[in-house]
Length: 464
Ligand SMILES: Cc1cc2nc3c(=O)[nH]c(=O)nc-3n(C[C@H](O)[C@H](O)[C@H](O)COP(=O)(O)OP(=O)(O)OC[C@H]3O[C@@H](n4cnc5c(N)ncnc54)[C@H](O)[C@@H]3O)c2cc1C
Image 1 (cartoon, rainbow, N blue to C red):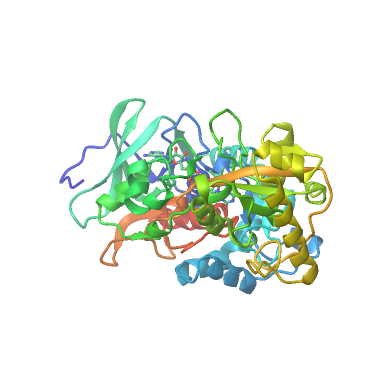
Image 2: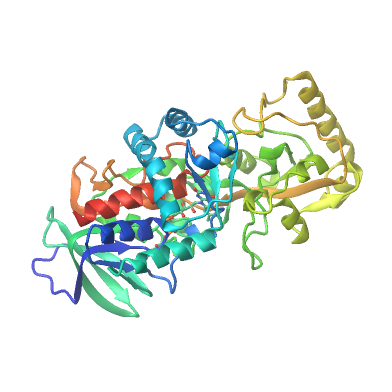
């Protein structure tokens, strides 16, 4: 919006749009520089997709890894991130993540965040997904924002447009609907967009990634793409939009009944994947983004994660992706004493399923998977296991669009960059709505990680 003289109803040094993880980190960090911050959240509570998340954050070289005897390093993290993104991600953004990641981990711990375990997950060459309970995490971060005494959080406040005094002028505020009333809010120093992704905006998803239409959608209620569109309207560039991908592992009933944690990743503990024909169709150790694409090519976009009691015994009590026992208790996981019986309850052909499992076990024994080249549990890491011991389990799975992992072009300072390569003065973006960091595919834990790392950078830069 281009307006010569704007009448403002209220002002702050920094306006943060969105009360998910990125927005809260930006707000805390801006407040810590002494800035007065107003955070607008369009829903009645903070949390966004962040609070629904699996609570895995990717950090390398931490005390938790060391205690578990895991050797990891900045260089290895950098390589994994670049590999996961198939080198289509912005090296400068990845370097920034790596440069700030240990400080971000220490900062979170200082704020009182407790990580419970380190898990091996998609795109990791060593276990580095630091696990926590996302509900506790987001509640704590909101409290820490309030503890600064300089962050005002306004609920039911939807930012609608960015304000500046003319084309090319600095962004100096937003038009918002607050409690149903329009208001112009002034940002004396800067505006941080942290409004999350756009998985719930079918029109935008269809525009960039029509091939993802068969995904189930599961993310924060506010993921409508408002932030991306506000910046786009001012000429912001867009990155990674062609790489929108669902995430493999979601139950086809996701979101149809109340409850959370619909996604399971027994493949990274040794399960195999079969389609409705009871046949394997992919190297199961690939990133779950690529597994997401692969399942969309299968009949009815459906697969089953098939595993035995040995894999079940690795069930976690804390990391939602690996809570297989909980999935069983919730009735989402099929279980049967024999493979034949499992085939019967899932509707798979028993003879084919038995042959598929036997063939796979033969590959594990021989040390090479002649069909799909699987060499490890995840990205080549972890020893493959034979599936031999009942009871047997099947988790019906499809691809879930839980995040868009793409959006406006930003530089390493989180400044929003326009289509001509110039920063849009006064405007910063962080979190899921910022593009360029992931490239082709996302490494587990790097989205929450980037919310913390780039949220902090954005908050500091907007404030100064
Ligand atoms: C089920 C699930 C599991 C996941 N698991 C992981 C994981 O384990 N590890 C990982 O790294 N990533 C994970 N992700 C992805 C990750 O959670 C998200 O990418 C990340 O939390 C996004 O954070 P954010 O702060 O950018 O956005 P959000 O947390 O979505 O917050 C954005 C906020 O902005 C608000 N908002 C939107 N528009 C406006 C507006 N116009 N005005 C004001 N407010 C607005 C929204 O209501 C929302 O509260 C998962 C996602 C889901 C859904």
